[in-house]
Structures are given as C-alpha cells and as structure tokens.
Image (tube, rainbow, N blue to C red):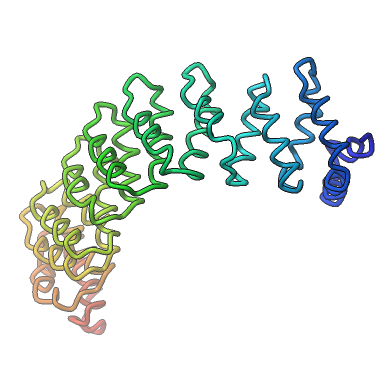
Length: 321
C-alpha cells in the first residue's frame, strides 16, 4: 500500500486525496493490513494514523468503520478524539458501548468525553438518555461536561428530559442554569412554559434573557400572555431589558403590554416603550403616544414622534425639527 501513503502527503490536493481513498476502497484487504500494522500496540506511526483519518469520510462504510474502530482503541488521545469525531459525522452507533465507557471514565480527557456525549445523544438518545441525564445532574462532574450533557439532552424530548432540565434551573452553578435556559429556549416546547416563567426570576441576567427568548419565540399564545404579564409585573429596570428583547416578536399580546408601559412613571421605561412602538408600529398605540409628544424627556418625545409617524398617527409634514 505504498501508493496509498504516497498520496497522503500533507500537501495532497483534493483530487489526490480522492485517488488515495479510491485505492483503499479498491484494495480493502491490503488496506486492512495497513490498518493492523499502523494501529498495532507497538506502532508509533502517529503521522500515518492522522493521514489515514484525514480520508475517513471518503472510505466506503466497511473501511470507515474499520478505521474508526481502531482509532477509538488507540493509546493516543488525539487519535481517539478524531475517531469520535468521525463516528459523530457518520452517525454510526456500532461503537456506542465502547463510547459509553469513555464517557463514564472521569479520568478521560474532556474532548473525548464531550464527543462521547454527543454521539450517544445523537445516534441513540432513547438508550442513553438516562446516562446523559445522570451526567448533567452530577454536581461532582466537571461543569464543562455537565454543560455538554445539557446540550446533548436536546436531542431527545421525552418527559424525563424536560423534567431534568427544569430541575437543573435550580442548580447552584450559574453556568449550568445558563446552559439549561438556552436548552429550554432551543427546545421551544409548551411543556417548558412554567420552567421558563420561573427562570424569569433568576438572579443571573443571562438566564433571564434566555427565558425571555424562549417564551417569546414559542408558538404558543399562553407563553406570550404569561410573558406579557411578567413584563408588566417587573421592576422598571427589568422592564427596559424585557421590552428590548420582546418587541421583535411583533405579537399583539406583547405590543399591548408595551402600550401600557408608555404611561410608566419611570422615564427610562417610557423611553424604551416609545422606541419600541417605532420599531414595531402599532396603530392602537396612537392615543397613548400623542401625550408623550409633550413629555419632559426629550428622548421620549422624539421616539414618540417617530412611532406616531410609523403608526399613521402623525403626518410627517407636521413634524417640527
């Protein structure tokens, strides 16, 4: 198989890479022999291993699996990572038992365990969901692995998954709560409404922001109604942040709540509410916007003018610059 290796130089072109893979596919027995020699226990041919792995996506299924199998058993963690990455790309589940052992070994390197999580979550979430949930909940785990487990859980939306994620919104580690809030936003299931509403009271701003986005983007009227209620019930400082996040939804439920806030005693709330009406013009807001033309705050009155023009409540010719 010298001809194969000769085609696997660092500077090989795409055409040469394809030719090398074709040579392997046409001479499977010789290629397997090359694999056995290269990946043997006594071999230290790291460069050759990497060159073989460079073409793993071009081999036929039989040869690709043979390469992945040997890579996963290699003593070099860099080779094992590449084998896991290849397994992830191919969506193969043939090695999941081995991969699960990699995940459960807390002495393994982070990248190896990370890729193991995502392979199990992607290729067979039903069989490995419990293992992934356990990893996500394990407070003794590396927080990075717990976060990856949270991301992997989004591959399988069974009741236990949502229950685990909702429970993790109470985790003492803010990074976990942030990851979970993102995951629930990504899932966008009506079953998560109550969890996201609870997350609106999280002390961390990032968690609250993801909860707002999750409720905002959910195709569910109850989620929007609850979010609108939360906006009205929040502190002035929080209302400013929430308005900026929810206005792009252009939902009538949300816009009605923003109209109410045009009459807020807090100038910063009136300011951002008037701005929002210009971003998402809402004709029913005209009556509430007109009094703001005489607001003591120049920015409020300026935003109100723009909103009135865009909502059809003021003729541009009547503007006085």
